[in-house]
Length: 202
Image (cartoon, rainbow, N blue to C red):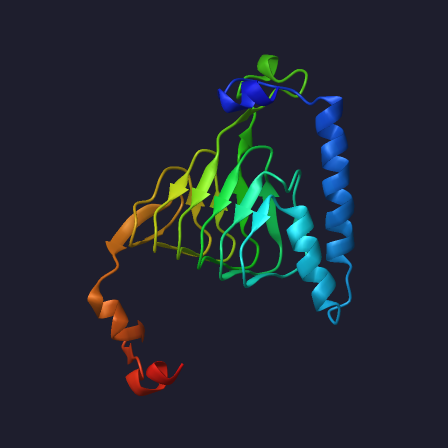
C-alpha cells in the first residue's frame, strides 16, 4: 500500500497501518493531556511523535494526527493549538514556520463517486510548507499543495493549489493577493511603522 500511495494510486488500510496509527494515537493522547508544567516531556513527545524535528520547535496541544512519522518539522517552528494533520502521507514543514490555531493540513482524499469508496479507498499526495511561511487561523491546506518560502496564508483560507514564494494569499479558494515587498519591512501592520531601534536590540 505504501507503494500505491507513493504513486498516487488508490489504497486501503492494512493491519500494519492500523498498528502504526494506534501507536501514534497513544503518543498523541499522552501529549494532549500533559500538565502545562511538563515542558520537558512535551518536547520529548514531539520528537517521538513526528518523523524528524529541528531545534527550537514548540507545539501547543491539542493536536490530531494519524501517523506522525510522516511529518518532518524544521527549526524555529511555532505551532499553535488545534493543529489537525491528515498525515497518511508526507507533510514537510520547513524552518521558521508559524502555524496559527485551528489549522488543518490534509494529504489524503477519497474518490468523488461512491462506487469507488465502498471499502474506504483513498489517495494521497504530499504537502510541503517551505521555510518562513505563516499560516493564519482556520486555514485548510489540501492534498498535493506546496506553499512557497516566506508566503503568508490568510485566516480562513482553503488552499487548493500551489502558492508561490513571498506573497500574501487568502480566500476560498485561496489566491495570491499581492507580493511581499520591502515596504512590508517598514510597516508591520497597516500604517504602523516598525520601531527599528527596538527591533535591532532584539
